Image 1 (spheres, rainbow, N blue to C red):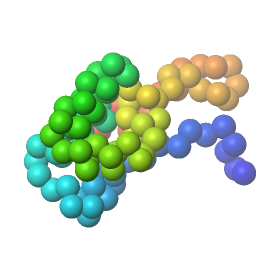
Image 2 (cartoon, rainbow, N blue to C red):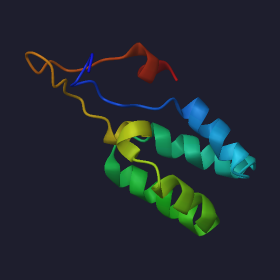
Image 3 (cartoon, rainbow, N blue to C red):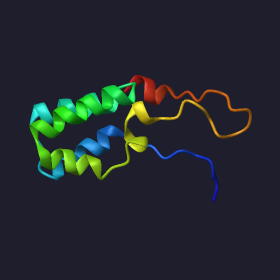
Image 4 (cartoon, rainbow, N blue to C red):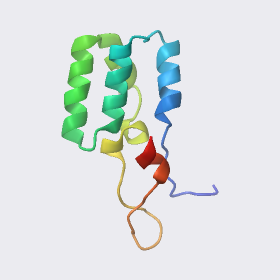
Amino acid sequence: MLFPNAKTRHCVRHLHANFKKAGFKTKELKDLLWKAARTSTERDFEDVMAKLKNTNQLVYDWLKGKKPTHWSRSHFSIRSDIGSKKEAHSDHDENN
């Protein structure tokens, strides 16, 4: 394995494309998906997911099948597992 300690993250733009292919095409659902992806705390994430569940159970179930550590900022580690445990920073994550 080339980078054994690398974290897996998914681009939310691509996740949204798959979301639409699954039949979830309304602006309201898109906005909730992006809101969940951009939350910075797990509590805020859970609040958005509760709204999503109340709005559309199928969307909620579809997203629950995806690990939030892969697509939601609220679940990203702020530490690197490599070397001296410095904070990880990615302009890509910050600017999306």
